Image 1 (cartoon, rainbow, N blue to C red):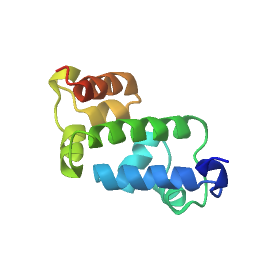
Image 2: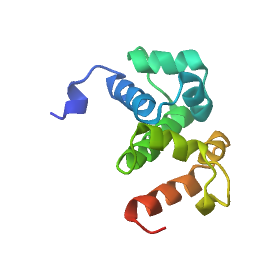
Image 3: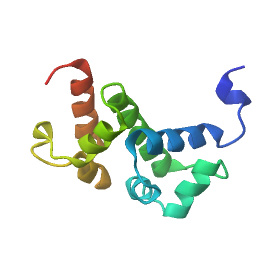
Image 4: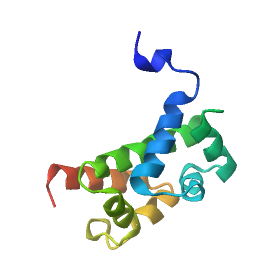
Length: 119
């Protein structure tokens, strides 16, 4: 039996939310905006009270992937700066703004490129 199967419903998402917030210093309001839900819902996920569904789940998992990959390169302050700073690989746009508009693919590609050392 896997560790995920033994956990209570929502606890895996609880871990994702708390890791995203710890590693990126992202507020619950920012994470709510990125996942398309109200801030209260993010608090519910963080407490393990509920689980994200459909698009919000997919966005949460994508944000976690981005933040987790960045954390292999930067300390939390660096992750926060990278997400909010202008990025040459993204045409001078801020990664957080692209994510807010649901444009995850260019950010994922840039993070993967950065992580592989190809800049």
